[in-house]
Image (cartoon, rainbow, N blue to C red; front, side):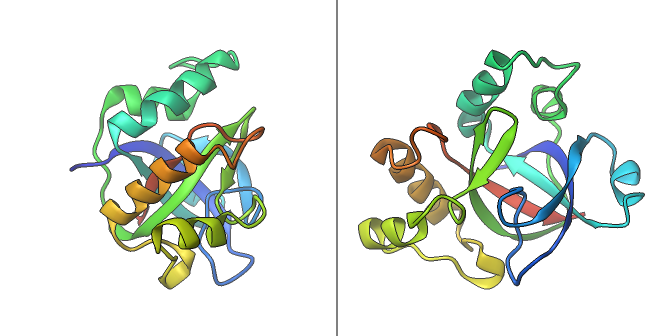
Length: 162
């Protein structure tokens, strides 16, 4: 299935892992609608892609925080429905928490919990290589409730180098 672009994140990698989460990477404060503006930061630019069905609960959480299509790049870009492009690096499990983006790597032990329950492990760049495996892991994390109280809905986002 085609992934819908949620916009661009400009990050400085602080480890061998690639991530859009402020917890494990130095991330520019803003999301970007426009690739050219993201590149002006001088940081590594990633395009983030959601499956529309997985984006819904997270978009609802962003809107509940007072954002809308005009004020949130993520909400606006997903509503536009533009497809992602570029080189797919892999899939990261992420969740939204009051303006912050968490990854399964930053909330203690979730990578090990997913491995024990599903057998799914991160590969190159700390990302899950298979979309199906990433979606299965995101569903399991959401159903397990192990991200509570920070993350209630997990999504497998594709990370692309535009």
